[in-house]
Length: 434
Image (cartoon, rainbow, N blue to C red; front, side, top):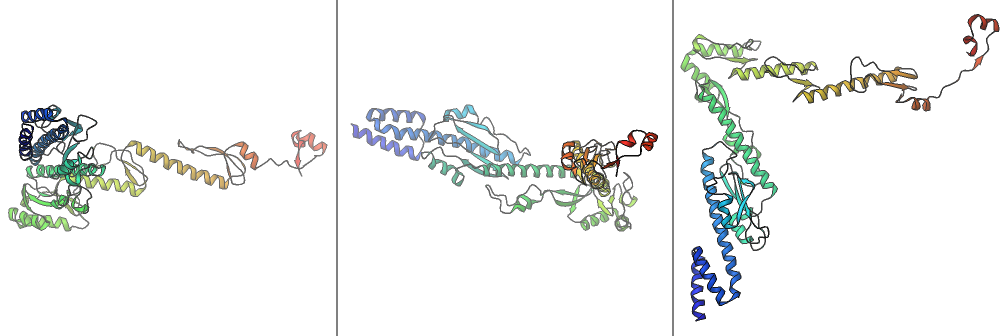
């Protein structure tokens, strides 16, 4: 009787290895094995846990497929997984829950509910640049085979990999922002040149670190110049644009524009006024020092740069609004443009302090021994307005330090004639140096 049961169970075990049991079948098999021998329970306990891991991996695979599809049509780099596919509620049946902050399509992470698991293990995936990378961290030797089967070489999430995934997210965000600005410019039926995402900039981004060719996996790839006329791409060079312009508006238009490009001294649009030509139709032209720029906004930016550079070249300070630079103050100090008012204040105080210190050094060099006061001239930064002592052209902070270095030398005296003393007063007769 027992041999017959054992044979049937072995057949069942073989069927389970090739095709997963239903939950009821597993419960029935475990119950029968419990009657036969308690020695058979541990292997089936592992099989049950493995079936739970298989089930949750199916859920994660479904979430990955859904995320890949949604990311192809979305500009949102922070897209979250569909809660109908992955959530704490539907993960609970497998003994899992979402890791904190791990519910994004760019980085999904789930972990066992129990803290002492050796079979279940944290697992998930990362998606960057449209590529899927499976991730896992083993909780012990029992989980290692399944972990490697799931994630391969990524069967351990390092901080380096997390930073890599975050960097890929930044590239995606930069690409989306670049292409969005480009599309807005095109949809506005703009003319001239603009930039869009350079396909080479993310063409060789690996799914895991390291990045070996940084120029092909960078956030700074919004640099592919394109030319359009009335919102239609006409090429990638100035010649392409000139040909399109001539075809549409005639040779006279391009000749007029070319004259401005070659004009000496180099031509710059006056004030905020665009250049127009009858032969060029409604097109507006913007020039900065002989170089044509596509929009008034870019022209204004270059004009602002000129104002900033003029202040820097003069060595001056600025915390006011500059022409062409918008409605906010531009902070310039120490030969550079600063980010905010605090940085400007710190720079001004540092420069003021250095200037006062230089003046004090000169006073120490030239002053006679004794107490010396530096004129602050309205400056409030230390050491402006400092009072100090000078001893033999050496700076002394206190009277005590001065007295220790320069003791008072009493003069040798001689007595005046009595009549002389009466005439000039007593003070003349106290001590007259010999």
